[in-house]
Image (cartoon, rainbow, N blue to C red):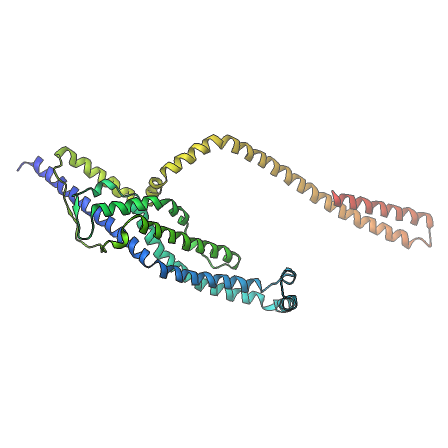
Length: 352
């Protein structure tokens, strides 16, 4: 057998192996999506429990330092007034109570992050399916018990249809869900959004494909049987390069994002290019206004300091003038008038 023939055979085997692994990874992603969708109701129930705990923490934190609006807006004003008074009397322990609530919030968020980690596996699998090549799953291309090429294609198409919803999860959960009483309302809102949108994802996947009826595919060392058919020798290298590109797209998160939102990104770039000059013009005017505002603020501070100094001098002159009234009426009157004049000047400067 010639070396050229051996080279062709090795490329063919490598192509078959890469294709089999690509198919195997696809089936594993389908399995991940199906598992999460089957367990979503339980997952959502746990997150809703955490959501209620966050809201309870928020309510207790608000009661630490009640404002009089609490009484004004309450239907039971005597009770609300008592709560308002108690809040004022217990301000000594306010800081310690806030610390306890933040610790409690931290424990809740620890469970939340654990649940969001499971969600990340599902979202990652959804992205990988959305960028999977449909042509790989043509009829008679591969054989796997419980999986037909048509059913796999249906799952891929459903993933592509739902992929715009994935953009809502593009944030670092560990950096966002930090225990802070000031942000607890925002954290609760975002967690509620995650629950609702993940439910939409699962419903669309179940509606758009037969994923709930497909058998589980646990990723093993076994590679599905792949049938390349009658592939010409010159096409083998092209297939090999194409498979490598497909694998790179699916493995790189940034490439996946670019691939998923390519059309939307191009539309955004087009609109941004059209509106960029106007935006830059507005920003320039805003910067000029900010500089002018800083100058006015500096002038107001100088006027305030000058007004305070003049006011102090005017007050001193008025006091001296009144003190000298029994002794020298003319001098005291002049000093008093001077003091009043400086006081008026101080008031004008303060207004400016």
